[in-house]
Length: 147
Ligand SMILES: [Zn+2]
Image (cartoon, rainbow, N blue to C red; front, side):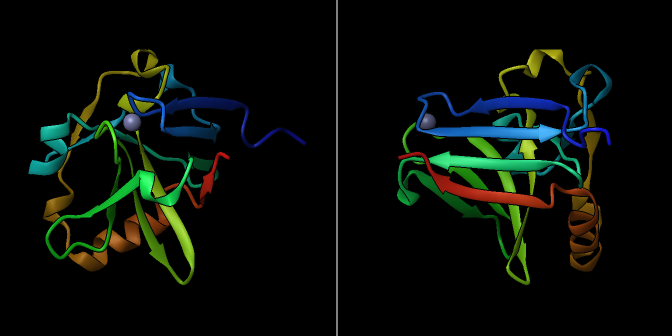
């Protein structure tokens, strides 16, 4: 059997309080992150990657170190370091399961990715977004203490 997660892509925020481990079949040189054109993501320069077969671990020393910002009435939560403010991922929880898209600019190998392509999720209805997130985002996500 082949390894479903051949690539381990570490990353994290600027100050080191929030660490990412993204295990994925994606290879950065074949992957164009999606630059969401909403005002929040553009202010952060965020561009997302996701892999429904991937696995994401967000490690923080304590839960208060990871902010969750909800934009307007949206169902997804933007996750930011409480100390340095770097946006590391966006998450959505449904039926006790956490889904996520990773901000590729927070990954150590961000420069290895293809140029980002624009995405306009604002054009989708809430139902369309949720259908998309649960189908395309990383489906094995956990936020854990790093001790
Ligand atoms: Zn930080």
